[in-house]
Image (cartoon, rainbow, N blue to C red):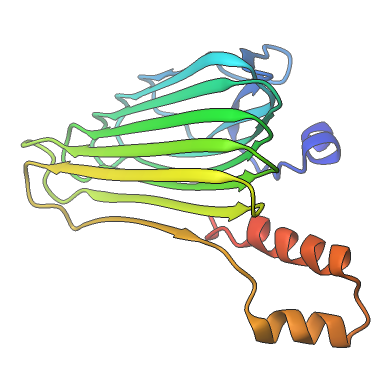
Length: 226
């Protein structure tokens, strides 16, 4: 899968893959069909959603297999108005999905992620980052639902943003908890380089644009490890 690294900087590892390019399923780069996970695989499953989008796009992930590890990597940008929905349903006992989502918005973007825990010992962890470019408008919402039959689940919905001074963003993390989880967290914050970080980079001889590039790279790479 070196193609995905060379073109999209998406890290791959030994896994069954489900790949979407520009919002469309890519059979050539995938090893299994999307996205109804009803069979247990020896390898983890890596769902990869990359490229450019416009208009309304939806990604449905339905996990019914037990004891399955999944990873979701999203890296998309939009230069036209776009609406991206991700729906995750986890009814597979002891199954977990970890998600790293990077959105670069040049226009208007609405992103919604609904994560449902429908069985015991399920995990859904979603970390979403938005880079808001000049005059962009972004709205990001995440809803975690822990069903009454989903004891001992782990839920985490995180949002963070790196924004141009003219960009606007709205974060809406929500939870609906009907049973006792191991943990259920949500958060949202705006990333800024500290005065100390900026002074240090400037003292090393970096220009203003170079400082911005370093801070952007740090923001992008500061995902929790799979």
